[in-house]
Image (cartoon, rainbow, N blue to C red; front, side, top):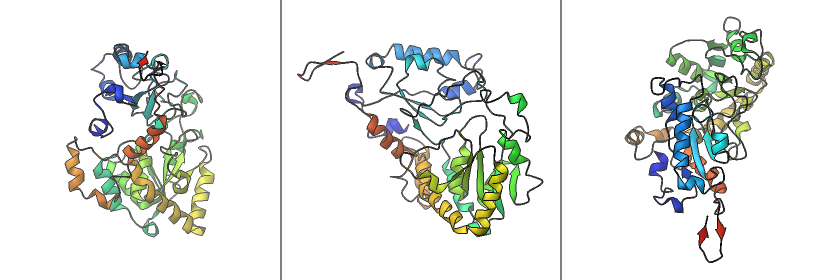
Length: 356
């Protein structure tokens, strides 16, 4: 919808720098009755066939080298492989806007990420206006937060390419970092950790904790990472391979901690030392997160019904510069250097005409 309403859009594809390929494959795959045999646990051949058909019938695709000026959005842990398993043959040079930089556990045989840092753009997951505003309203000053750390979630073994998941099912395996965190539930009173609780309980933890753990789950990315900034909680990334979005534009290390997955015990000691002896570091981390949080917001476009909500909701109180500092603006800034007039398979005669 943003591309549809954006002033950057043209109805003449010959004028465009990029060709956006709209699709809702995540919706198709998440409903197993749409395509028989397609769900989040296996590669979907019917949607792959749809992509191949669309591209084969497009004259614009055949003018490019591997779909070089084509844009795709992959908004789940499946990356491009789940909905479009043959993308490496069809669009190896296309630009992917995607949340997932690494691997999806339910695909044990896929061991190469579909994210390629030299051409693709990592983007945040979309938080609702209600979540962003609610977390901001509930956020407590750091000195009033009773918990050192927070995590709510299920245990997850690592991807099969790392080790056999059956050998890493509990806290005795350091790579099952979620289990290691959950094991602190009954032993560390200053930790807010639990599994299978009401959604609002997660908000309580986010807004009452100084640090919020973001461990690897079924895949690398998690919406909890983006929630932490609106809750005023300093994110602690526990995923050695995860890369947060927009590092090209933002000073991310100033607003978060990234720690080796297998060293949670040492991490807890480090966080307590920051809280007790270096409080200014904690305040600086929180302030840096507050300054960059709205770059991770996807405000609705004017063609969406929720555009009415954003104007009624006083979102300015949460992001006072959301018109110019948001995820759409960041994506546009990162796309601009990728535009080139030489992207097509053309011969140029020197008289302004172009022949493929």
